[in-house]
Image (cartoon, rainbow, N blue to C red; front, top):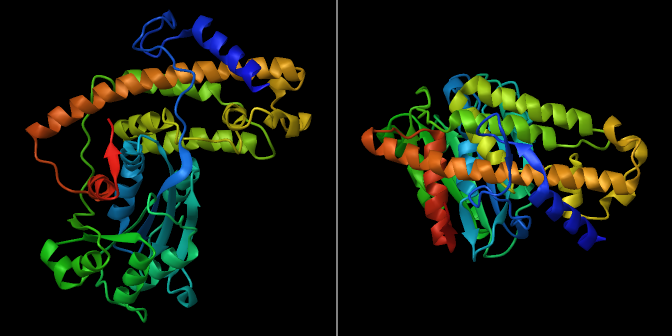
Length: 391
């Protein structure tokens, strides 16, 4: 069965004609630069990169939340450049908020927004729902919660990172930050600190010490600074690709239609921040780490060729309900081949885009923001753990 479906997908990928992302004319898949490799590498759960982001959502942190919204997809794209012995690791992200007086004092004003998850649209949705409110900021407590509550994967080949950002003294609260950070390190979890304010103040209020204790990195940022973007000649083409890639998703299950709608909502959320942020998200959607097998039939059958046997007719979208199983498999294979072609085109454009951005950044001075701080440390810590960076 697997060989048969693979043959159908390969045949479609090499013979069907689709509209090009780059122009309005149809383009056959004959250009070696845009040709699809059907056996694309998938992330392996054998090793993981797990990242917990702990955000201060007290009243003064609106700028920090805006930076997080602006940099989520840039962070994801940085994570996807890391390989472990040539393999693409699975990526999981978790979100916490702390210091919000709208939360319970019994929880130390802390809330787990999302557990470690591969559902990147869910992370985006939760991030865009955050609101700030004045409160007490207990760094030790939120680090302890993240270390003890999340399902961290054992093994030296996994990279486990905590990023905590805020602007109040790091030593507040009844839980000693040193104990919480040392506990993290004992579990091979590296704690990185991002102080929203003056560098010397961050050192004086123990943010640097928190990072040193946790074998992590210390940064200071201006959380009220707007993220600096560089527009490129490739942005419009990538945007067109994203519009077309959305048409390759086939919802299934009780929440399939809702999840597909949320995909469009997160596109809109990214675009509401900036065009560049929307493009970053589009690039993320071309990566294998952006997977939606819980609601998308293409991803589901890619993971398990026999998955269709366990999906009831009523769980399928309207366009498939009148088709038999063989017809559905052909339809899914067609969408899969189309998506792979578009992903390849985005990949080529994204590489050119990044080269353009890198050249422009050499000409101007860029300041650290939340995304730059996380991205640069991910690469540095990854190299320490034996990961290589592939553009």
